[in-house]
Image (tube, rainbow, N blue to C red; front, top):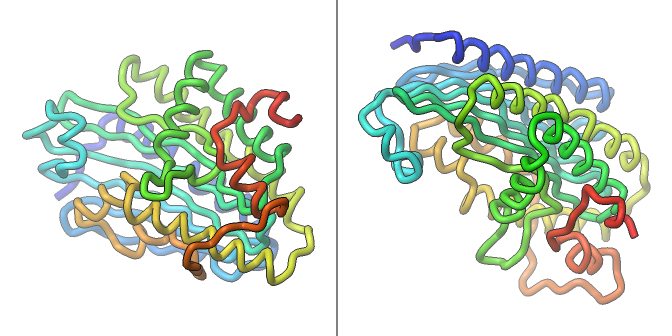
Length: 305
């Protein structure tokens, strides 16, 4: 079975492949030691992908950047619940997804996912990027959000506040009653003017490296000890919980018979859970909960005060 690559599909496909290439090239240069291992795979039902994983690097304990395009005859229930008008149509999905788990606890984990769906007459863009620090720095949260806001403002000044709020609500662990991190952007089922929305998705994807690389450069050399490392491993547990319980991409991948290794590459190599943990008052660990795991207008300079 071969997907028909219409003009819209081929253009988005080319962008997603290029985004994977630019991100992996820059991350290799940043790390300076480890390199991405590429794994090309085919999906029996239709489609395939190109997974790239970097392990045990100088800066990144694990970094995964995936490209995929899949197609089939029937969308899974998780999609049909949101877009019932797509029922009965074959579908095509392509996208780039990424999760970086740094070695240094002062460097934040970061996630990116941009995707495009077509199902008969129905199409939409979705995705976003968000930052998950273990130790909070106002300067970093501001820079990440301000960079994403600038990308949004090129297209529509209502996009950033709308999609920032959506991100705060989506990357929320309902069973814990807490956000996953300091947020970023999230949107889904975005449709309307195709050319304008494709241009918007491109701006968001291309904003990732300017949003994240300066944070890596500021924090990667900070000294840390066993206390910081153990807290990082504990907080990684929240990342695992969200991805396995709430994440739409994980659910979609599992429901469509996706490649398990690529779906679960987002999980960190090491993690720990601790029963009934409470940070000591007045510590940097407590500050994460009190200041950073609270939705804020991080793009504003006032957030630095």
